[in-house]
Length: 188
Ligand SMILES: O=C(O)CCC(=O)C(=O)O
Ligand SMILES: [Fe+2]
Image (cartoon, rainbow, N blue to C red; front, side):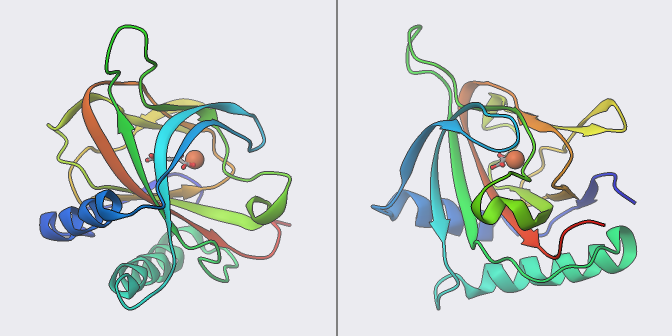
């Protein structure tokens, strides 16, 4: 089964807020304008890598539980671990007419270099309240049709890393997401 899978309420609103606060309190947030991947695409966002530490182990545990459940019931892929850590992302609406909106153009998460080559499952958790922003939909290719992820805060979507997907331009407010990739031996 390679269609996207939805897990509602993976995180509580308080847990989402905790991650947003961690992001805002960090001095390691980086700005992205371009990303690689199989197709290089426009990526306008700010992101922060999270390692598994005393402060973050709770969210790694939640994701590990999610992965084992959806993989048993849905994907049945040969998987190993979350290897790269987790990423918190913030997409902002444009500040003025000249500035570009936060977005991530159509791409696949499996790449040809470095750690992206072994990505098998992609996870995205909506950290923002769906009313807190406009635009910003996560769309995943599902057998040639566009599938739009639910916007509910705390909802996780899991999809094969070889599916093309995009984050539409954010036209108002701010969207935060938590993303992670599960790695494993090459598809064969
Ligand atoms: O923001 C999201 O929900 C997905 C981000 C994404 O596709 C990525 O970081 O590869
Ligand atoms: Fe992606």
